[in-house]
Image (tube, rainbow, N blue to C red; front, side, top):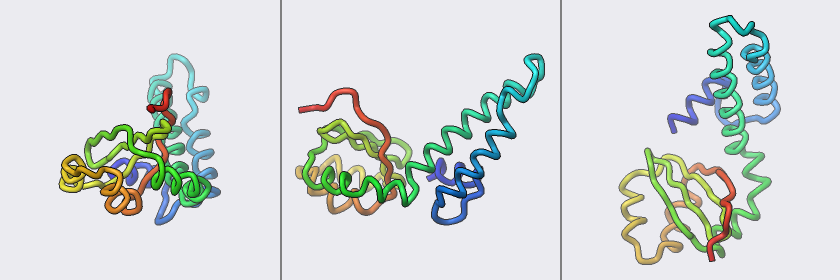
Length: 150
């Protein structure tokens, strides 16, 4: 959740994410911090390179959790979370990363260690996830795995 709040603060987002406003703010920040604005011997060039990378990462992250993006992926998400099984999952700092059998990876934010421990101990992983994870936490499609597990 810290990551979400940090990016929302950077882009001055209050409440739900509006993609049009986000894009406008993104363009303004990229203009301000573009490394090409600075001379090679300017100490600000290195700072601008780092800052511009953070801006780009933040923009892509916020787009991935925006309601419009999630709505566009909703049918596939429903199918994936009801039919496709779970190949693997990892947990770190209240972020649960679930890899499905088709190779898709989703991140779920704010998952408590207690809920994760219950997930680890369950003998019916998909059933537990449907009831306690998939529709209970903010999520985003993170990446596509290289090889789908069978």
